[in-house]
Image (cartoon, rainbow, N blue to C red):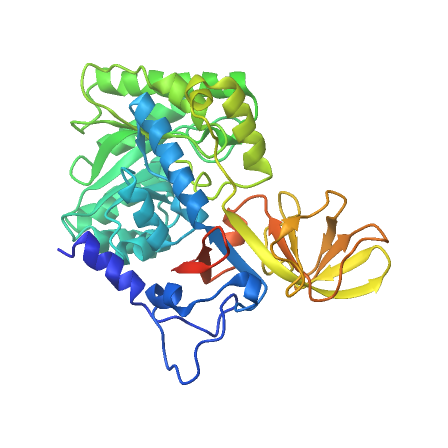
Length: 431
């Protein structure tokens, strides 16, 4: 079996692909460079060694956020399987595993396959596994005895299809009953639907292994409703255990997106089934955080949760985009060389954070709050500024974002920088 160290080396030795955006000019005569060699090239953003726009990750802030979440989870005695769909970066998955994560959560069979190629062997597929080709992917991976995967199921129809498919192959699939709420996403809505599902799972004892219960509370926006939903999950898990339906020696109970993980920890930490239970939280955006929807969530958590309050510093935004001012066509308007192809815009437009003028400023300075993006096109952003603002074509802007998931998927490679914007590493994504 390939060791963790070898897997890390294999990621670092992958060839750098200069055809993609967000890199610097490779030294003359260079045929290929490995991703792991980027830190040796001496690139610095402020010296304009890197082509803009670029997505950068703060090394210091990433490590802070990793430590923060590890401490939070450990204090509650829970486990962590961060949602990998946020970054789809196996290198960052390994950072998370090295910081104590129990496993990685993923959303599709293709994502599971990509993660497996780089050594991710314990996975929660937080979705329904539908379709023969998707089932075949999981079946192939399960030929590895060290691969451990949990799949959600919420309908008797799909339970029957899964049971038949894996029975034909002489394999057993670990399934989690997904609970849902009226008007929400997937998941069993009521007791009758749950009973129908359990009956069907019971028809396939050789191929379906009922391992536990899963919820996603993020479809609810009200704390009282979320707590009620989480308590329902506890009740269902206890019921399944009392009826002898849970086949695992360590039943699995899992939930928690990036906005309400504190409530999940508070409600579930005291669970006692009289035997070991793995309670696994799945937030993904904590690693890079943001200045939008997850900052708002973090502020609520810091003010309400005693464990979060006890930690001196909360989560920090670790992902920024840098872009040039490319045009000053009229007073009060600056056009930036960055657009919808580069940054998330579904939960608010990017926010100007830093301003830097190459050759004229010793260091970036905070961007005035009056500088605001008001519109984005594919490759352009419209920044509204006071008519007298000191902005020139060629100036550099760092922008914070909201919803990191939909920024990561726009980049094949992201640079990791230190506090002086020296490039120290790079990571790849596999969307």
